[in-house]
Length: 233
Image 1 (spheres, one colour):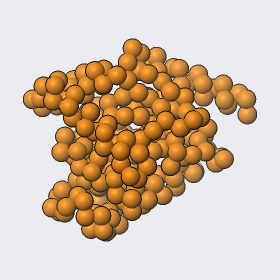
Image 2 (cartoon, rainbow, N blue to C red):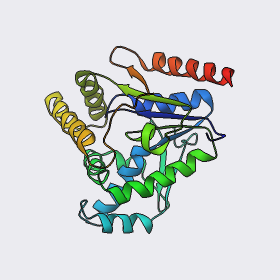
Image 3 (cartoon, rainbow, N blue to C red):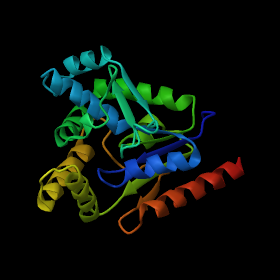
Image 4 (spheres, helix red, strand yellow):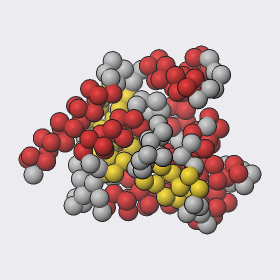
């Protein structure tokens, strides 16, 4: 086990992973690592270069030629609602990657085995030297299989759709709740049926349904478990 304390969180889209992980990291003084942002940034790279998202070799080559950095938001300029700051080739793309198009692109490039291998290695390097809260869809079994705590965050599709719909409305995106439910259902299917590391619950993961819990309740629940584990060491 690494000398760093690792919290691995998996779960489907819109289960609250990003917000909960960010607040948990703040509460514990850990680094928050949004792995989904890495896939979104890769999709943005390919879309800007008009590269076919299914062309694995070209997408991987493009990523290899680019510099991708992540950090916790710095006050005051970056305290604008973002969960993490993503720097791509010197450009702050934290909001540029949060479009619906980048989200759809992220799920498409995430099925590319070679690309996943490149990003997983980077994620493991980050977690090896510092305490982290890392969230995504393959963290508990592929990226950090020896994490101190493994969590699977989930919620009903209705609850997840309501959250995502609110996010879209805040951004000024005109979309119906029915369209969001369809989008999430399709994303779930892609995540669970992809050949490379399909989304699933590992045997030793702590499964938390956030449908009827608020963010603070979930954060406190996990933080208390972290303290219990630290006390046992």
